Length: 315
Image 1 (cartoon, helix red, strand yellow):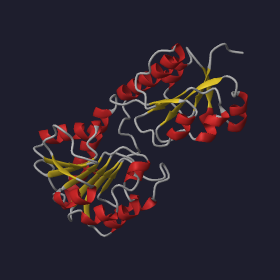
Image 2 (cartoon, one colour):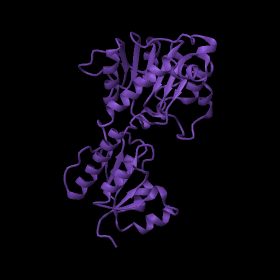
Image 3 (cartoon, helix red, strand yellow):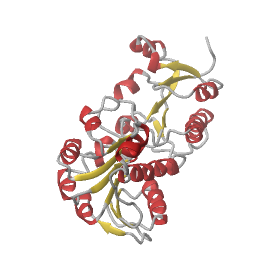
Image 4 (cartoon, helix red, strand yellow):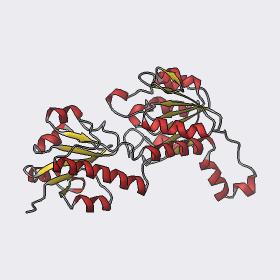
């Protein structure tokens, strides 16, 4: 029997994180347990912490199954899949890993913007399948520099996207709950008001109940024809049925999507659009950033264990 406190690992992590966590905790790999109920029962009196991932979260039933839990540490920024009210009611702290992935996600947003607008998929295929030799120049695309960019959600990531877009000479505007002090960009009160004013529409709002369906049918209907649509937020933030309809009808010129409803079993219709660039929710998926995320998650867990202030508490 180990004298280390128990840690429930809800989702798979890189090996380097497992090795570091095992120095202070006895790890219970919930994500690969053949009998998860049995694991929870066996760990009921020893597991004091849970680490999870943004897309997996933790519900009230999981917390109740492990009554000694005092912290849920999220490997990621989004905590919308964690039942925060249940955690608060049980006196459980929740932490996440902000800032360390901000720049990486902003890079992905710009990559998707460029790849969609310039039809990177077609260009690469044009070279690989011999079309360049047999058909000549590929069809023309559209530029990104100098275009009007609208950002839904001007938080840490939204501001990092805006900083990059400014280097492209883009005219920047945004929507949010209220105008942000000290921000020079043009403000619109909601995505529907922002949509008709921009050439590139980028969603970077936080997930959760407050933003579910934020980019609604009205917003998607208000997009100007030929707009470039980018989402590095959460699939829940966008009305996916309306987005698919706009893509199907050709009202959206191109799209770059890193997030979807029902990940990873996404709606297969997305695969049918040649003008859509798809990514597997991988905006933070670099070695450097994932190591930083794991370190910050671990430091929060260790702070709780040692009775020190948490580094990035949500509650």
